[in-house]
Length: 538
Image (cartoon, rainbow, N blue to C red; front, side, top):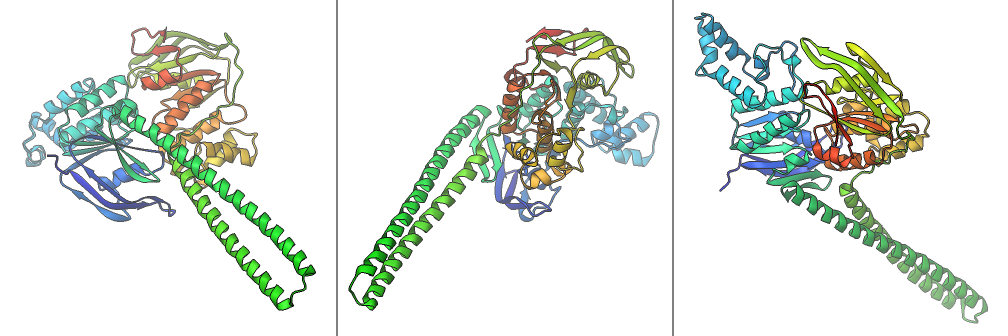
């Protein structure tokens, strides 16, 4: 029998501007791996912070039956932190080094306690996570995002909590890192709540919780079972909306017909009264009775129309809450065979490492190139070289189309500006209503379109960046994307895949998501792990 590890009771969370993210939310977590999914901005990360005690709910409480470990989306490190500090054991490791050098200070022995094998255990975990080349004394800021994520997982292993809450743990992980994460989940003896939209991770979940405007709903896992149920829900919601809309239209037509009948009766009654010989008091009484009947019928039809409109509104909102977004990309004209860029003899060094050595690469026409490789192999560096924001140490770079880069942190956006202001600035030439309409397609409407982008969720910021690049009047003929599925919800990933399938320009994308690369029709793959990087056909 499973034991409760954590219980959330009647949780409510409200944003500083008064928007309710969720209310009266209940959740019980037990052993095993489960997932939490939901659209960007629905409150998943807020719920995670509440569950681990980093944020207080506006109502409700969390009851703990075990220690909870937390891996946030971005592993934060201090400017002077070493690898040992990132693992949460900087002081005991330093004390072990001092004792090894001859220290007999009681404070050093107190810092170590019973953990005399700590350095050996850390070294073992570093090797198992593919980080055996890292020194505990090395600066943590020299690590890539994927390496910091793996260090965060090792830190949790050392702390040994009974329940783990991992917020987007696959972000920044290369293929090797993802395999380490899957091994980690397979071997974990306690409970795990994964906040993720990575389909390969969802395939390893026993149950999937979805947070939406309809509340928190539970589905059986893994991903394929969840996906089939969501497709059935979508079909049912569409049919329910179609029926509600049909009833609403009939109600309005019946009301209009009733008004027309009432008007005809009034005209007939007026003619009859003008030609009648009855006493005025009887005619007035008859008119009053007719008017009362007409008023009663008008009220009945009015109530029917109002009720049917309300049912239509509810059905429409329920349908929209589960309907995938659309990304209608504007077509670009890039002829087949036209040279897009050429790299000749390009060499890139990082410290004592050589990332690219006398490298050559041509891209012609609307070809689609995926750049893969381990964390720190130089994938993002290559995109910046193509974008002109970084120069190689040696070699020639010829780019014949104006590139547009959307990097992992959406640095093209001004976080002080709203989505609407960024869109206007980066893609001039549209009317106000066109900007708003195209943002609304990505569900960036109303307050979200006017809120500073720095206050939006990671996925929402990525949507703003995509809108600025792909939905403007002049989309680029060379598009550079760095991990575009990071922070994206399932519906947005599906929309991005469809939008990129429609995109007719040249594409260079850095991604470790094999399913995503398959869906967008990648034809060429550059793997930077090889001794001499080369491009192969996919």
